[in-house]
Image (tube, rainbow, N blue to C red; front, side, top):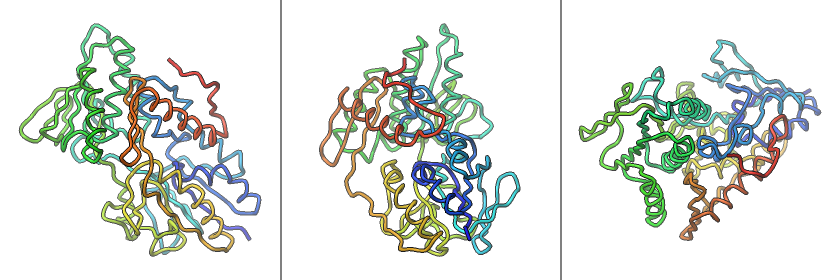
Length: 379
């Protein structure tokens, strides 16, 4: 008799499971995907979508159609709690959902401790749909009125978003003052050469780098930074460190220091063998993993194998994270900075490499509804 597999979130680590759902449903298993919306946007191409280099359809997966085409169920909702002993999920709607096996790929979010979720001028970088709203607001901005833009967070996400906003405002012909509040410095975990290349690119385009203070509060147009520094903004994009949803800790399930679901080598909860997870929402017990997309992508096939083995019986496969991997940062002006170990490359060739990798990834999983119609770059 078939079992019930619930997928909480349709992120990068679940894409192979979603693409091969037919192999599970055809064997009598019931599969349900719970997701806040019918689409999942690929974070690696999000800065390009904000800048206008990519159209939204080119950077998203049609989850609902992907699931329903393969005989599974789609529930537009959000998991907010877990009754692990009872194998039951609590949804934001108030409904419950029972499972035999569950896998979490719910990603991470920007902490809202220093700004109000009701502030219409502050946009966390996640969920990525926020970038579409900010883009639409700037498209409607009067071209004869200067706009003050603030990016909070000097890590790779903040730097990429600053570059994307530069391209967007230049393309629109909007006079913009763009400030990047770096807090602990610009990309502090990157190598010195990478930092310098990114710094040169942003400063050349007029981005003001504030490295002497971190953002402590956003209050409807006024940012307060440590060191008694204040900065006015019309729109703020918040790209500070992301964290997993607090539901794992609140549900009494073992978590790591960051609050992520604590998993073993098999991407399986250390306390509940019927609970799995991948991507940004987990804490890998063997070694801490950087929150970069390469890990979630490589967890794809491991999760599919282990979920199928848990449903039908079989040996689990261990996830072995890469010790060295390539990172490419989109600077927004048709160039990028590529880093692998001590080796780096910058310029248009680096962006071409990133664009080729991203488009190939999208073609592999855009299986229902959303297609890239050509290889031509939009706008």
